[in-house]
Length: 225
Ligand code: ADE
Image (cartoon, rainbow, N blue to C red; front, side):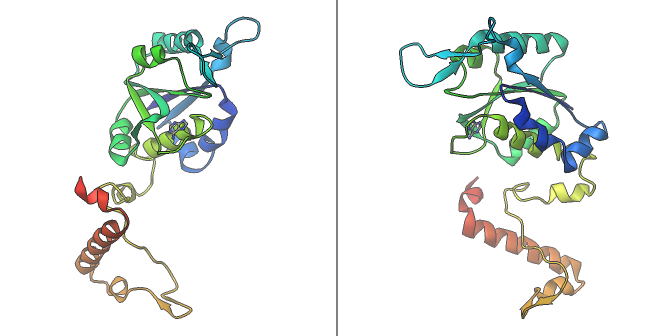
């Protein structure tokens, strides 16, 4: 899978993709992540990328030409399955969206800053808009990093134990059950006896039951879906 990201702050995206599982995914050739500095497409000597908004109001708006030129150049090189804009005024990312995107060949992600991008970019080029939650970040880069992390770990071969991605929280609209490791007792706190029993069908039942109870308690909205 190839992921291109357009950003005015490309440095912000270096670290998240250069460590741990996402780095290994790239080293293994399972994911290619390419970051494009929007400033290179800026207008005039000052490489302008933003301007005041029509109609007045505080805050700068990212201009249409630099973004359109960057998207058009990338689209001339390959076909994108989705052109995604990271923005707080969109539907919230969930596991189902991550699953769907992990099956795509090429995705292009546009990150915004300031007041956001000229609406005409959204109307003409964007095929999907994604928020990572009901709060506003200083820019879309960290949101894009969250999206890429959630998607890339689902590509087959990225996580060693494939089973582990399948039993994540949300994969079946349930939170994960509690997990324990050694020691079996710490400062009087014991691991639930069922987990030490070796009775695997019973352990599966216990885990399902715990996942359901935890979901009911913390995220009952997930059970409504
Ligand atoms: N840009 C700023 N805030 C954001 C959010 N919550 N999700 C996606 N992109 C954003």
